[in-house]
Amino acid sequence: MKLHHLLLASVLSLNTTAALAQHAHDHAPGSDNRVVLALTPDERVMILEEMRLFLDGVQKMTGALGKQAMPAVAEAARGMGRKLAHEVPPALRAKLPLEFRQLGASVHGDFDQIALDAESLKDVSYSLSQLSATLQKCVSCHTMYQIQGPALDARH
Ligand code: HEC
Image 1 (tube, helix red, strand yellow):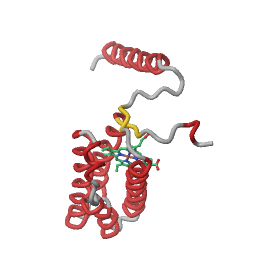
Image 2 (cartoon, rainbow, N blue to C red):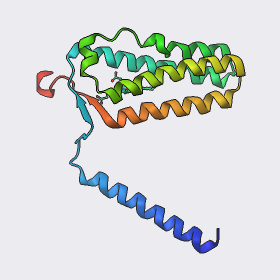
Image 3 (tube, rainbow, N blue to C red):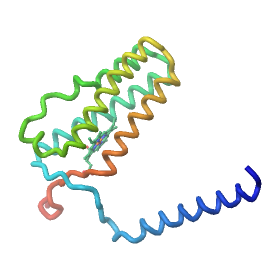
Image 4 (cartoon, helix red, strand yellow):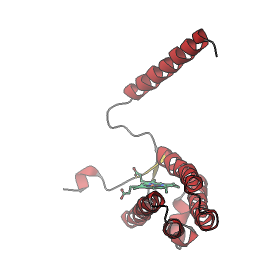
């Protein structure tokens, strides 16, 4: 790429960054435009518990990857696999949008695959790139949805 092309490209990307920052400013402080999943308190607790298991599993997995301990990598990944997708009560299931359920199922499926590949390939950087691709799905879902918690004034 010629120098002026490079300069133009970086000016354009600066403009995009500035536009994004401006967009963020347009929102009222504390506003959250994600789709709200209106769940009961118990349902919310159930989902958030599963989420914390995900975070715990990712922590274990990265720790094991750092030590190149592939059996432990597989164990941590499998813990987040389909077996974690325990029986979702039908009433809760019915409240979850199809896209939400599909993303969730796809994340569980990925972790089973990551476990299999960690065992057979024993390749740290391959496992890491798989983990990164799966974490992108966590990011996507969190960008789209929130769960309505107890009303703020009901907490006192
Ligand atoms: C299908 C959608 C979906 C996927 C996939 C998903 N999450 Fe979540 N997660 C949510 C929602 C919705 C919340 C609640 C967010 C809110 O209300 O602000 C949440 C909350 C969380 C929380 C907060 C838990 C708490 O106690 O408050 C953590 C941590 C978390 N997710 C981790 C993860 C990780 C790690 C992954 C991927 C391995 C993941 N999630 C994948 C939907 C998802």
